Image (cartoon, rainbow, N blue to C red; front, side, top):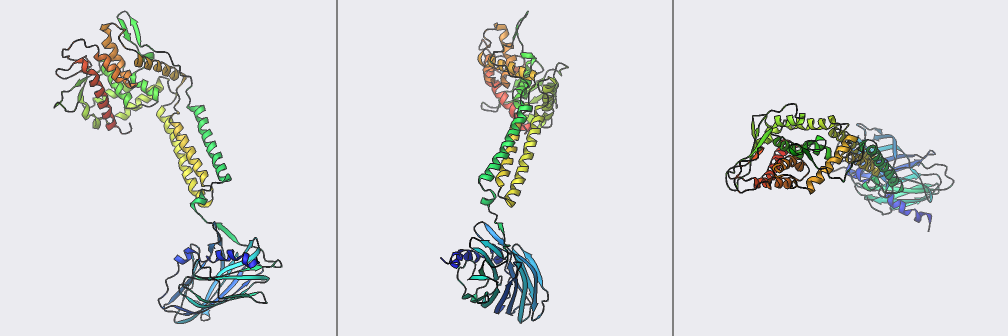
Length: 561
């Protein structure tokens, strides 16, 4: 196969030399603008530049005439070839063009001149980066006729290229592979090209090879065309670097958790913690280390949430700071509701978060209806949570507030995630390493997730957690049946708030109900009373409904829950 035939595919690719952007930005010409003749002469210099002079005979229908020279054309499936334009000038009828404009476009230069009637426009410019190196040797190419918004009836082109060995010419519309009407290599190594008819927006591109005697050096420049697939190329280099970055990020998150996020001591478990203290007045309830229900929930899951506050309210009721009154239904199928009545203000025996909860619930008076608590609690619940978090630190169970620790880790993770998003965009635009940005994003996400379990208990906190686990075993597996009948009601009542925070409300509400030994209506048990004809045996369902309703009021009052 001849050298010319082997290079024909390259010539076909260069037939796309008029870029899509140039086509879309072709100037709108006057309806009766006509090009009557076109000729061009180009000369390759020793330093690899092409000096071009184009002569256009124009019958102008308007006062201005524009055309666009492309500086970026498609080279292959992944790359574009870029050219440099310099020394651009124009004359009209032998005089410097009036109103000459040389404006940059996305991928070229738009040239505009003032014209009137029959005009001869001569363009002169220098093109750089026209010499390319290929598997068959050096070659020179340029889409010399291009960027006109009307048809060219006939074009005559002469290209002076020292040591030229062959020539290929493509002309027609964008995408055309039709050869020029005539293209030949003269004895003087000048290329003689003739083309009958180039459509509006069409182009004429020449490609010529150089012999080994040519001293001009390759200077072509190529830019990788941006595509989503290229931006996120999956090859050994991109995947390898992404894995390294992700591995460093995950190891960093793991190291931070290992050094800063682990409990200071092991949680002892397995032994049942029986909350019974035998005294002169009989067996009494005694929580491990005197821990309160709200503290239990915060130590267990490191969060002061709805369940912790609901359990605290039940505990305050059992300890005689308020009473819960179940209101009669308006109809048989009416909505259940409760009235909370404050019994005493409480003193220094109350922990700050317990006092804050009482003050929040009864801020508007000595009574409060559960169904109306949401709006009134809205501005006050944050203080309860703040006090509860501060309390677990004061007790020595955490070295720092768990919510603050989570916030720091989560913020750091989100910052890293955001940096990964920015890095992904930048890398995807300018390189093929978009996957590396994804790796940074995943590392930030991992750090934010690890932060949710990062609050670390102190050795004392880990020990308390172990005793809470033992208490949970007792509440889940034991009953109050082994206690004297006279102590069962009080004991089950004291256990109830702890059961509520540990998810065992129904069981211990039924323990209270089991102390009802008759079918008579009951006035209540001091801290909880029901409507007319209410029986203590009904308290299981009543308390389950209350816990759900009060928790719902908290959720409505504080969306953060």
